[in-house]
Image (cartoon, rainbow over all chains, first blue to last red; front, top):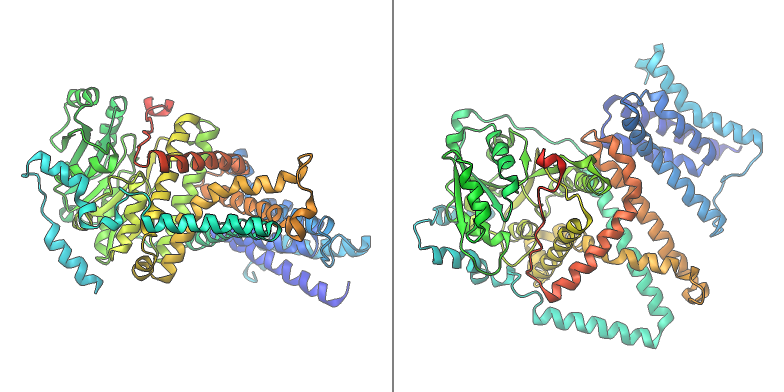
Length: 137
Length: 483
């Protein structure tokens, strides 16, 4: 990976971490929209990794505790924007042949690196919720 | 300037007029608005000027289409898609603005509570009267300061008999509206307004269950608000939301509308169409603008815009009234057709003088009116067009893809992005109430919008055939109401 995509990934991961922690604290509608939007934005850089992170994030945030139907609703809300964004980019790339950089390309190692970058917010949230670095966040 | 205007009107229109003969009161309830401000009356659906503009637009478009079908077809397609997307983006903006914090007012002291009039229009709804009486009794407000008017049609013997049989307390009064056309809810409310004694007034539907502290919250909000705030719109939702698919979708619709979109309009300070019931008024302001338009079948939406045109403002009230969602499709279709027809009436009435609207509502208010009222109508009517344009190439023998040129993907993409946006907003609607179990229903929103489109075309047809016809919504059909 060259420097620019790494920088974008770092910014994207930071946005996810910030919005996720903010949402976990206040659980307000704007926080939810911000979180969905940041997860959607990361789709441009690393669709598959971003989707995995989006799927894992509610569990890491400890949000799925309000009964099955309520949890399903919250998961649907958090995952909707990233899922739709991934579909749109896929459509633009595959059907309309738009040139979207970094989309579904690269070697397995570079894909793994992207996943690690995207998973950074999960690690930070885990530290925020359970570790001594809470004040840092 | 606005302050002085509000204050003068208050002095002139404050007194009730119940001493006048009934036929004069009836005539006033029908004609007061159209006599004083014919430009705001929906008695005439389209003015000759509007008709001429409409015909000219259609003729020019058809002529141009025959002259250059590919270019004009592409332009129309792009315009439809852009209008659809613009409406979605505007609603997303309103949701963002409306999602912010709402300031809270301190509750007023018991001694400071004024007389409050409650209007409840009923027609052939004897079955919901006991529940209504209970809901009114449950209000946390001194009974001696309540002035509750049950507004019944004089020829509705069954409901009158049922109301009299309930042996209601003295704060209840039955108002019999003499039969006269138009037979609409706003005309009945105008008639009852003559008898209202309160400083403030609220209108509820027969099956409404307002939160007990709603009147106190309204008093506190009015006292804290500037005099330009003539009306507070409380939030509405349904107590029978989980009853079936239709009621769940309706609840999502209402949650988005009342919990996000209207607060968004409030925070932007632009004209707000009132919704259904639980509209709290300063009664002098309501009299000053001659009450409701008896010829408009969404008199509430029209009233919100007319208040803005006459120098007032509407704000939202953080209190909920729970209603009964219609449980069956024919009833829902009748209700939604009427709403969309009324929105068309409202748009046409307030666009009779676009300059006047621009002057009274300001540039931001003017555009928000176009996007919110016009956008609601357009989205309902355009959705099937975009679906048809998107699916046309799949039909054997239909024009092939190149006929649409390189812009073919515009309707497909705008339909997809627009639907995705609307779906997300529908899913987000119940979040504020914590009704997350309803959120997955939002994924079925495109199906619900097809029904709305059907209602839109039905409403458009009725606009020209029976513009004032009031398709009555049957209440008391939910198991949860009768229980």
